[in-house]
Each structure stands twice: as structure tokens, then as C-alpha cells.
Image (tube, rainbow, N blue to C red; front, side):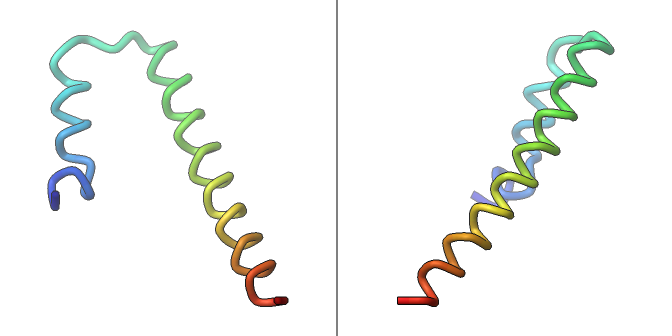
Length: 52
């Protein structure tokens, strides 16, 4: 569980096969967008939960 939380297992799985540079850029951009979306959604949910 600690390894999955740190992202070690995903990194090992990604390194198993070569990742083309265009696919790597797509993945990095997707992960960044997902982090931003998740953070904003958590902020919105906490704001809405605080109001009621």
C-alpha cells in the first residue's frame, strides 16, 4: 500500500516498456490536469459541506 501511494508500482509498470515521447507528454499533461481538477473538486466539496 505504501508503494502504491508513492507511485513506485506505476513507475515500474511504465518503465517495463518504452514510452514514446509524444505519449509521455500526453500522460504528463493528463496527470497534471487531473491533479488540478481533483484539488479544485475537493476544495469545492469542502466549501459546500461547510455551508450546510
